Each structure stands twice: as structure tokens, then as C-alpha cells.
Length: 444
Figure 1 (cartoon, one colour):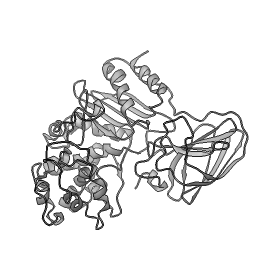
Figure 2 (cartoon, helix red, strand yellow):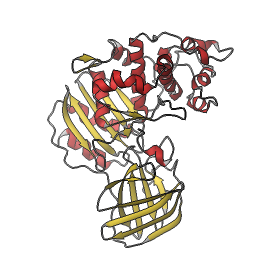
Figure 3 (spheres, helix red, strand yellow):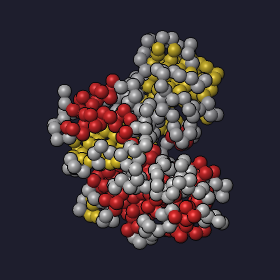
Figure 4 (cartoon, helix red, strand yellow):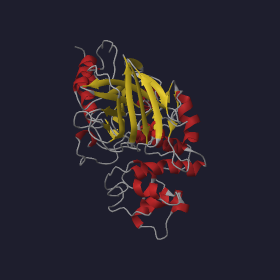
């Protein structure tokens, strides 16, 4: 069994791993590219905190253009957001401290940033005095990552996307999307939507010191600065997160990585000149996936691998029950093996399912929005709701119950709906941005 086959077998055997895509490049050549049905290459998925690296890249480009410097103080760059009587430690914060999440705070500042009544998240962050000396510690700080986008917006007078499009996206030939807040501002800390190839292209750009197709895209020296581990993270509980933090990238056993919740990764491995990019939806984030990558794939990058063949997410089995099934209310409850995440479950009512041979129909109301889905056999991709949210449906039966898997292909997330003796609804992994249906699709 070659390394790729061993990796796939181990992933398939683990209840903690759900792979959606894999793209491995060695010295610029594609070694393997694979997608687990119903996901396809064109899916532009939510990469969660891998978005942070994209926001940091915008900062690197701004620094390269002389818009501000790494050692510039935030209070000097955003004077209109400085609160009266600003704390002395806050006044010490520089762009470097924000990039490296070494602000001295002992907790994430994001809640305060997002709750700012006037929308001035920068003022909200600068109103929180660091509890320890600036630069003395690392605390994972989404509020700091939000501020990176705000710095670029304030200093350029435009959006983060408008700044990045001609400088980063167009040179790479990619077209990401990015979620925005109520004031139309990209989040910075999350919300970027990328295909697997686009995420890989950013990893490849960093691997090649900011050069793409012979053209320098990132300022000289930026990749070296960004990939230096500027702050100690040895107190992180998981050892793979205890190897240091750079400029919105995590240190790794080899190289470093772009890292998003539930296992949205691009590993940058300078020594073998490789990138390993994958998307997934595992229950324990990316911990189990990361372990398998370094156990099977990284040691064998120079070896030949066989084709992975056809790959697919698990579908409900079919015991042959005929239905129909209905429920006025579908309560949040475990519907599969223990471990499925229950947070942020939508209110599902008026659910009905029926079958005609291997063809299925499913109707339900999601937080007041009526939806109608059809499919079978296998996975059926379709658009649902007034916002045309992409979803793939697969249905089957367990005992006398109908079981539906709804894969929201612009995200890592799968919703399971069960109707019958054990009626219930649960996410296999819960959306971190909330369960609103419209947020489960890529924003134009």
C-alpha cells in the first residue's frame, strides 16, 4: 500500500476525519488532486481562519507600498479611533504585535470588536488594556485579525477585496469571495471563500518566496518575515499548535501552515518544496487530519503514489423502509454516533419525506423559510431557498426512520435530519458563523 492509499484508508477509518478535497504539489507539479463527492473542484468553500493569512498578506502588500510599517503604532495609524485616556500598553501596540497576536491581552477581543455600537471595532479593541506587557505572550485573538483588515481599509480608503484583487488575486488567476459585516467590511479573521486550487495557489506563493510564474507578487522579504515564529505558543494544549506563531500562520513540524477550523489547511513545506492543501469537516477540527498528513503524506512526498480513484462522503444506508415520514417539529438531538456537534442548530419544522423507489423528496421549514429538495440515488446537488444556497442531498433509511444528509458545499458542514421513531436534527460539525441559511453560501 503506498502512502496516499494508507492516508486515505486511515482517514476513512477515523470517526474524527471527514476529508472533502486534497491537492498536493511537489516542486510546482501536481502530485494528486482529489475531491470527495459531492464536493467538486469549483466549490468555493469557507476556509475559516485560513482567511487570516490572506488578510495578513494584504498588510504585507501595504507595507511594501509604504502605506505603513511593521513598527508603526496602531494609535498613530488610526488616530480617529483612539479613546480618551488610552492605556499606556495599548499605546505600545504596533502592526507587528497585531500580526503576531502578541498584543498582551489574556483573551480574544472579537466579541468587543463586533459589539461596538457605532461599528468602530478599532476603538473597541483599543479600549481594552492589555493585561500583560505587549509582546510578552500569545493569545489567539480574532479581534486583532479583524483589525488587520481595518488597517488596510482605513489606509487605502477602499475595501480589503478592492486592495487585494489587482495585487494578489489577479496575478494568481484566482477569484475568492469574502463575507462582510453589516457595514460591508470583510471580516479579516474569517469569511474568505476559496476553491482548493485557490487556497493551494496562496500556499504555493508563500513557498516560492512571493514569486508566481517569474513575477514578484509579494514584497521581497515579506514571506521570510511572515513565516518567522515571532511568539512562543508552547503552552497550547495540542503540540501541533505549540510550535510558534508567525504573521497569521502557525509553525509546524516542518515549515508552517495556513489553518482554518475543522481542517482547512495549506501546509507550506520549504525543505521538500511542497504544499499540501486540503479541506475537511472533521469533528475535532483538524487535529486528526494533521496527524495523518505527517504520518503518511509528508514522509513520502518523493515516492510515487497511485491514483486515489473515486472518493465520496459516506451516505445514509438504506434498510428499505417506504414511509412517508413527517414531523411538526424536529428537535435538536444526536442523530448519529456520539460526537456530532449540536450548537447552532436551525429551527426545523414541518418536515416531510417520501420516496418513490430510489427517488426521494424532502420538504422542511428552516427558521421560517420553506425548502423543497429532491434527489437520489446517491448525491444530488441543487440550490435551495430564496438565496439559492448550494446543497447536496443524499437519503436513506435506518430501521423504519428516514435519514437525510444535507451537505452545504460552500462550507465544511453537513446537517443530518432524521424522521421517524428517533426524529432529530444535528450538525456533524457546527457552523461557527451561525445557522442562518443565507450564510451557508458564497457571497458575491
